[in-house]
Length: 180
Image (cartoon, rainbow, N blue to C red):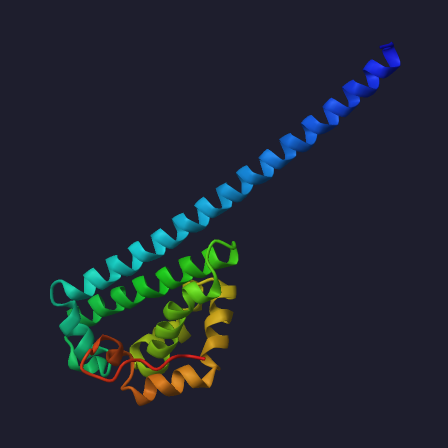
């Protein structure tokens, strides 16, 4: 073999090495993206559980049941606890919305959060006041997303007919109909 033939073989081997390296990097990126999505889904589950635990433990579930339909039926201290709990929920929803915007969650993953938040805003004077009067608390794109959801009548109509956001916690009622 002369130097020209050796050069051609070297170029071929070098080209194949580049293809193999790029394939490996692509596989690593796919695995990394899947891991990030999985981590976001796990975090979503943890946030749901933490929030559910907050409602299940202590007096918050009682405060929620009385205060969400009519916040005049709770004491000032209970109202403050309720506002903090609802604020926690709205910020959890915003965090998950941001994960969806980054491609780590799908809109279907955050739909239940958005659905419950919209129902709470539409059916709860206290949450509606907090949402409408404190625009600085949430990013403008998240507010626009939720406000678009507020205009999607089927979910809001179902929630109103089911008795408002309290119905989400009431297992004695009929099961939630599928949302199309």
